[in-house]
Length: 125
Figure (cartoon, rainbow, N blue to C red):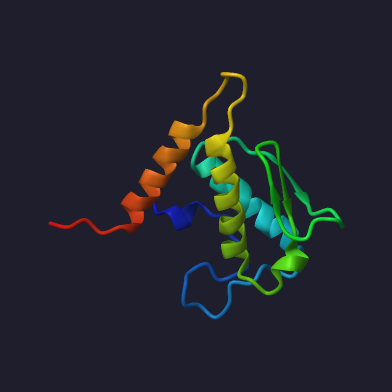
């Protein structure tokens, strides 16, 4: 299954090169949040609380427990890229997270990055 096939389907074009990848008019936050959660599930990573940004947030906020998405600060950025960008910040924090010796996410995050590289980097023969 291709990675792109895991993403939520909707009335928006999904492939690069199509006319537009803007979120449906219904709710940009919900669309970005849905794609973000789908990425977490796709790579078997914990799904944090995903909330709209606070009025005091100048941009997106990520921690292991909570992600706040600031669609206003993102402007007209492609919603799929926005979700992927926030996911990247979340994964960086998750990699460094230590919970008193409990679940260590460093290896699952490293495995996820290796899988992404396998999908995107051509092999030399």
